[in-house]
Image (cartoon, rainbow, N blue to C red; front, side, top):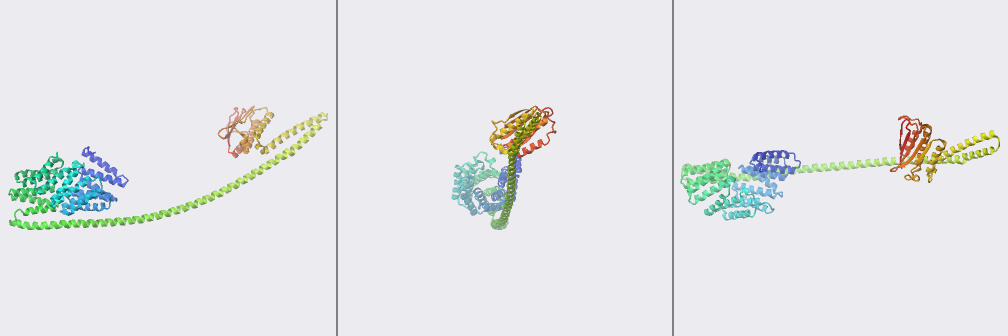
Length: 628
């Protein structure tokens, strides 16, 4: 993304920002917001950077992201020279981060806090913040940048406190640290440290060593364009070295070049320092008017941009100009009062900011505590309601299950009772059928046999007329015997349970119709696939009755000369096909009376089904399927 033109990067960031609005996970959403804001910062769009962080503070309830947003805003206001707002945000960020485990953000906050304290002239407090940041960095790996900044800040603070040896110690530690770490080369950490070491040597009046370090910085490739602020600082420092080395005329070009860079880049603080140094230069040249002009210019910049510490330095330099001049004596009194007032105001502001921040944090913590109490109470009530609902639901479910079980048990009992009744009725019917069959076979049949034998005796007379009548009666009695025997067999279904009896009965039935008609019958019982003795006798009885009904209908109605009866078994299903070559009938028309209804009723008893295929002059086919 960095390789794209700036406008394309901005367009891409806008699309990413719009897409991130629809992110559901808060952690992901706010993390992306922070990254997008940092991208805007790197592109120089600081207003957009501030806007995104303000939105995070308004919408976010996650403390880690709230702290990061405060830290970002503190850095924004620090760059904008709005130190009071920067300090407010950094105190809030620090108070949140002290309760977290985010060492990286905490060390960043402490370093920025130290820089702000340094700005207000609170050097001991700045030293304390930098030391705390350095200690925090040692607790976790990967914080090389923060560790360097802590060492650098400690070196600068000790330099302001005139602890030059200690300042050198910290700066040399920072330089040694950089030699063993790979930090971002574009941040110019090494060059900054070399510059700070040069400043310490300059304050120790060792301008030769100072010039040596400043020269090393100036040899950095393209430093003027890549870091104009540092470049201007080094030029100004070189000018001071020349000035104090009595090379006065060589100092002015360095001061002028540094001043131009600071003014062009609007580096106000460094521009004020340039004004002080130019004032010193003109004092050396005994040009008090020019010296006073540059100091007043610096004082105006201090008052316009709220630089209390450097303002004191400018006022002090003004008082050194001409203490014997009456107008300046009056100004001196005012300036002395101004120095005292500014020092007191800075310290009061510093204390007030601490107090207001603590008070705001207490209010915030109180609000958070109240919020959590409310959430806890609501959660507790929701849990009670949920448990109540679950208990009521479970009890209702148990009652419904018990009622359903009771209904099922009642239906089961009724079903078993009906089965017993149906079984009792069926047993009674079978018993009655067997009794009638025995009566017919043992009683009526025997009597008819006796009558037939008696008639044979009578037929021994030679009376032709009586003999003819006797033989007719004998034939009639024999026909009655056959019908009664058939009826007895039909009624006595116990015979179907005997081994091989079903096959015998079916064959007898077909032979009987074969003898009494001129129709040719073909029977295939498929004994290879069908084991008739293992089939329920109720099924065999209904098959026998259906076969009897079907053959009777074929003889009476079809005018056929051929009937084929074929049994088959496929996948535990008995398939029976009865086909004739008779006259057939049209679809939807039947001349078989109650025959088809009786067949359908019998098949319903054994879960069977049938369908008929017939058309005029093409015979009839009956297909029956019975599960076994």
